[in-house]
Each structure stands twice: as C-alpha cells, then as structure tokens.
Length: 268
Image 1 (cartoon, rainbow, N blue to C red):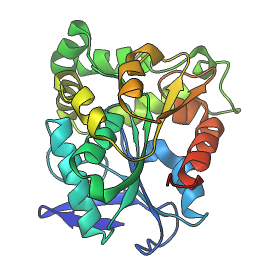
Image 2 (cartoon, rainbow, N blue to C red):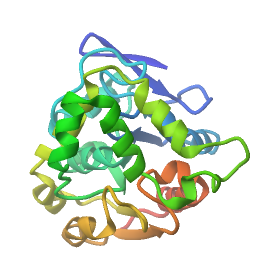
Image 3 (cartoon, rainbow, N blue to C red):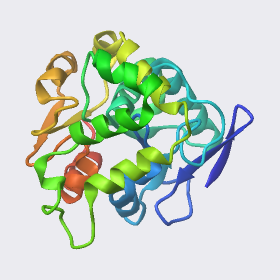
Image 4 (cartoon, one colour):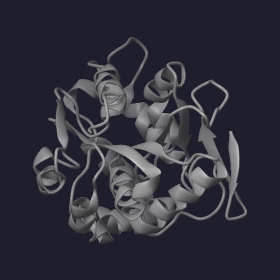
C-alpha cells in the first residue's frame, strides 16, 4: 500500500490483506537501518485476524521516498500524519528499538491518536558507543558488521538457526545493506541524541507493554527499567534465548506476547 505524506510516497505493508480503516489498526515501526520486513510474521498474522495493519517503511527507508528524519520527535509527528493519510483516527503502535522510542513519543505527544503501545527492545537513554557512531559515518560496512554481531543471541548463529537453510544473522545483514547510503548515521544519531524519554513516559496514559530480550546486548533489559517505572501499569514480558533482533530470533514468542496484549481488555 502506498500513501502520500508531505508530497512523498510512503510504503506500508498491510499483511497480505486489503487495508480497511474501519478495523482496529496496528502500526508497526521498525528500528534503525530497517524496514517493514522485520515484522513479517507478526504483521501478517494480525492482518489475517481482524486487524488493519500498517507496517511502515520510514522516510528514506525501504520503499518509502524522502530523506530520513533526524529525530525521534520528528518521526513521531510524521507517524500521526501517516494515520491521517490512511484515514485512521486511532491506532495501536508497536515499535522496535528506535521505533520503540517513536511509539513512546507518539503516545506522549498525541494521546488522542493512540490506544496502546508495545515497546520492543526499548532503552533510555539509547546511547550509541563512540566507536559505532563514528563507524556509521566513516565506515558503513564495518558499522553494519558491528550492529549485526551485537543484535543477535547465540541462537541465531550458524549452526543454531531455527530452520534448515535459514540464516537469521545473514538475513539481517542483507536487510541493512540494502538500505540507502546515508540513512545509517542519521538513524543512529537520532537514537543517541534523544533526551525526552522520561518526560514522554510520564505523559503516557495508555496501556503499555515492554518486550525485553534476555540476551539483548544493544538494549539490555536494565536500560528500560526507568521507562517501565515511569509508566503506570506497564506490563513487562521477557523473551528468553533472544538478542535484540527478537522478531527474527523468537518470532512466535513475540507474536504471542503482542497478540495477548493487543487483544486484552482496555482498562476502565
């Protein structure tokens, strides 16, 4: 599905179903150097079980046109414009890594547009090491290798892949390699520079889920605890045996947690 936002094409995967804005809508927001494809299983399942799905390519990523947006706040405001273009009054927003910070910021800045949020691999602050930040600007292939190593638990490494002929580690590297040149440093600078996490969390009033991968080296579970404490009633689900790329390493467990949370009754 293609939308027009700010006179630029936006691509959204709808899970193999025609998009119906009358259905409850779930918006998926990928992290740095990613695109809609990281949500393959989760987006498709929900689209075939009564949800309208928008798994987005952020500006400059994947099939979406334009330049990458330079801040978490700017991406959050852009998400609300996407909802308007899709004629969606309210949505449930699921974000991974920097996409989790975006979901958090949307809920804080635009509470009337958000029913609930799920934050996967969230951290605040989401600091990037000096060495990696410099590599994103000066040596992209090296930066991608560093990110790929730190994004996965041992379960994803050969010969421990979950299925014959399927290499989680290699697939993720290829996904990052096919993003446009220049996207990587913008994405990682946006993570590193974001300062509004605790202030945003204090404003969140909608149901919130944190999914934490126990082997996550990029955003270890302890780095989400201040956000968890700041959001009243936040749920926490831990995914065992997975690193940061939990949607690929433990897709069924992630889907189960999302399905239970998104379908649970709204608090009264």
